[in-house]
Length: 502
Image (cartoon, rainbow, N blue to C red; front, top):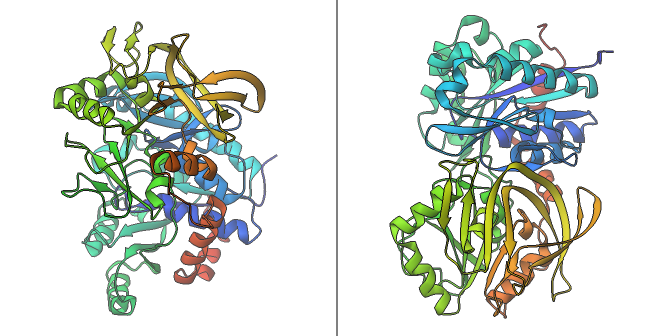
């Protein structure tokens, strides 16, 4: 039976990376704090930053974070279509949590009927389970050349009977054009759904923008529901790109007195949020590096995940990274590979089925005695274990097509005790004889404070973590508090209490 109390609210953007995910996350926690049974939803997400639900399904990390903020269990219905780019023009399609196919952009957009139907089906299930769904749009909601095929933005809002809040980013400039331009070019029936605007990422004295708010409201006839100052002191994982605040190819060495950690910035980097706990630590200078450079001054090097491991490995060799990595290894630096990065640290990566590109075998860095074969079935699991030789419990999630086999004499990294809450007795990863090269399939491994402490102590024995580190739930509360101070919540609750009829 349909939930008679059902309501919905759509958070759409004037462009990509304007903060839709963060606004939706904040509202999920605000509504949850108000006693509402709320769930997040994004019909289609394009991101290599994904996670695993308790049911073993793959969805975007942003929707997992939003579910956590809403205090509900994440499900595949919250992100029914996930596109994971593995080339400049193609992506793996994950449909309702499972790998479906690989499509070119042209092939995917030729006919979106299947994807839209699955998305609608998932949304209707959420309707039945929750009294409020916070819908997040994708990219710009006004890409007119794709408008008829766009089932993520206004088509979802119309079908859900959802009022729309439009998010714009003032930090990148042109906020008046962002908002007024978007409203000017969308069809009148969709413009009528827009009930408010949120201006995100304001820097400086907010009092100086009061006249700007008045002007914007006068130009558009749409109320500004809040101007959100740039927030600091806590962090929520970004959705699908290395954060703009990240240090990418800085000219200098790591800041004096900090632990320098270099991360190779692959063209198809995935699950970069694995590094967020290190990036947030004030004792660490974490730098993403595209271009080869001397790693002098860095204490650790991380090879992160990749959605096209053989392609990114070829890129690494072609740019000359191998020489710098081997020099760093010879100088005693700590090297850690996560998922695709772990595979690159091995001896070879074979793709007999053409999972990520042409069939073949690619020689790897051979810093670990491990060989990897990419298989057709993806491993998806939440997992727990213990670092071998340490009293350090680890947890994370596995998302990989590869199966890595270590030589008999190669020491594993983790003893795995459970996958998807089912007890197992298994091993993960590999460690070099001197313990300086480490590989693991556990994404999110540094989210566990004890593991981060272990790793940074291995890199710098004098390291000591701050006495208190903010966990995800505390960060969601801080986010909600920050937004609550700057949003017209009375107006927002009025908007959701008067849903439109689909």
